[in-house]
Image 1 (tube, rainbow, N blue to C red):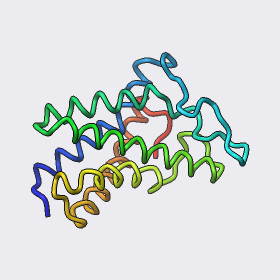
Image 2 (cartoon, one colour):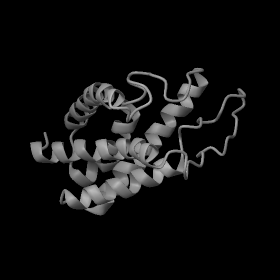
Image 3 (tube, one colour):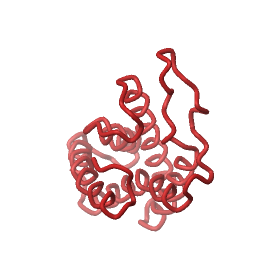
Image 4 (cartoon, helix red, strand yellow):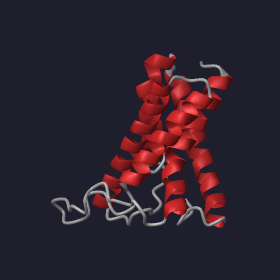
Length: 163
């Protein structure tokens, strides 16, 4: 089991990685909101990812999480891994949601939180000596916190929809 301080640092990095795109959208509006999928459609004629996945969000996540890692006393590569894999998980869940005919930013409890927390933790597993139990605990805590915080963020108009 990992120490509590590292657990807290990783939760903060996961929050930064997943929250930075939302904050960038609120701060920048539609500026720099280039769709990650280039508005392509998949074989099912649905959008590949949807309009809510932007290059701006990916860049915001990488920059904010990397700076956050340094400020937390972790290596920049931890921030890069967390943000990169969190965004990969987010993109994966968007792809799956489009195949399930769910609208962009629609609620899919578990699918919205697990890939974007599990993938980064698996990517950092050996570097930070994370146990399977620690990863499971972090994913569950992240899932619960994201659901609770999304309602607060929605109330203050920082999120389009609550989860």
